[in-house]
Image 1 (spheres, rainbow, N blue to C red):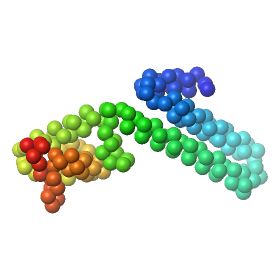
Image 2: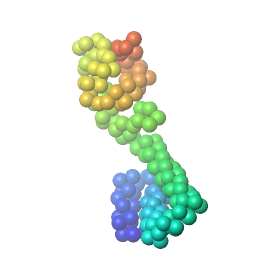
Image 3: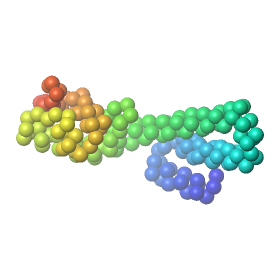
Length: 164
């Protein structure tokens, strides 16, 4: 492990002391494997056209890249899932959408204030209110629906008893 990798490992462990060291090591090793793959590609490129042809013909570069991709995807997925489950500051709103709890609290406060004044809100208005994309606005509204803070009525949301 290089000095840079070691420093990065220390930073991650300090930021997430409960994160299993193995996941961090796997993640950093993924970068080392990518570096090895790029070095190998460079060596093949230096050897000329016939070496590149054989590399492609045997599929070696494709196999190396698939191994790297799988390893990195698994490591990143594990770290993300572990952090979401164990970090109370993060809230999974939808399968691939996670919000910081403070940002979620601010969104809820803005939604409640708006609904108390206007009685209903559309997804487009909510998106504009928070200055976020539709990709994030809809899952947030569904999250608030599931928590019974709001209820969907047609194309709008209305406040339920919890928020009144």
